[in-house]
Length: 523
Image 1: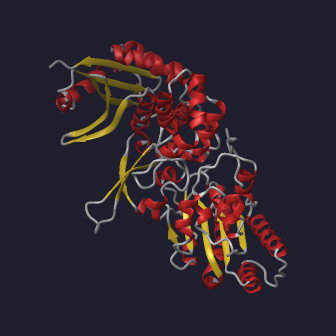
Image 2: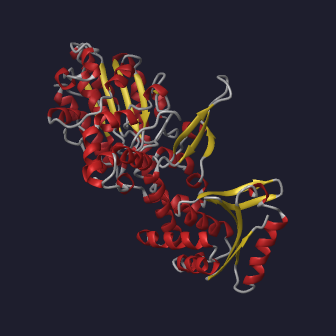
Image 3: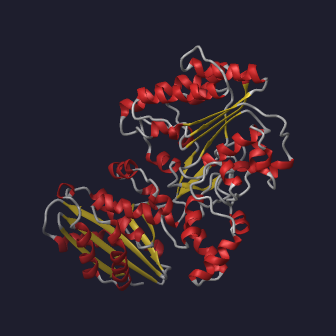
């Protein structure tokens, strides 16, 4: 079996040392023969750097590395071009001065590599390098920029540094418009498409291929690619874990597939997939590799958990205008990989498409909900498994007393200052708990006479919930009765009465006290 390319971002290293490579050169060939400036957004650890490295080797004419791949017989290898490759992941951006210095040194190093002397400082020196490379080699220049947005993303929590870094990048990207005639290809990758730094105003007709159907699988593994390229690993892993290959495929599809940018083609997360085959054990590998703490904190501060609880529909403006100074949680979740396109549709070709977004797979769902629960309540994420099992049994059995005890255990981890009259806070907390149990749950269902706090489905059983909060202790029984009466009077249960069993659940939070009541709705 070929070696698994875990952490390998160099195409040359990968091919020279017989690592497994899923051939993406047909997509690459389509792109580089159809235009000049391109932008692709994908989440972290999704193969962007390997894609950039592959482009570099193609334009440098290293034909031998591509033997057996699609592009080998479909490219004129005599047409070699000078390549400027910039990886902002390896450039210091802790301060604007460090960013400018590292960036300048990188440009000087590339100039020295090609024997070119620069007379201008940045950003003019960058344009000078492109012009002189074209003149001295007689070939237009290829510019590859990996993680163009990292100096911004890394400093979202430090507005002054972020603004200075934006200024530096803006000046740099403006160079491209002036040197367009010297360029053969410009390719940028990043996590986000920032509108606030005017990156794209520096290009003539930059082609954003992030959502293009024809490039939907340029990063990540499709189901067909997984089965064809990892067949030996699938057979050996299935034997190790005692499953059939079909059962194993179903499991890893549930855990690691599901990412999509066109609503039709889905791909596996390559980082998690490779680690699964290496360790032959399920794990939240991608999530553990660097989930930003500021993402969890923003969701907690905004108290908007709808994006991570249920699929929802947006228009394309959510993706077109991502301003780092005014972070929108939906844009942030999507562009960092915690939401993906579940469906893309338009009434007709004259209308802009609508996108249904949702969590891509079980790895992201399980990990994100655990960490959000911990952020909301300070409850240790490692302790959730036992609590999940107990609460599941209590809900299925209609054990209100036991459910009170489980919720009280969670409540004990909520910092005292948060025990205030914020019904929405406790509502979000309840939905997180129930979602973690694996229930098919929907929050805030609007009816013509009110809003249902939560509804979740069990096999043959629907539970309709009303959640109340008060700032003082006491009157627990009366509050529970009032919550049940509200559900009865507004007939929240009515639309579910065709189910074999329907229960009404009232939950009341009052500082450290909690009360539950479960009543089966008789037909």
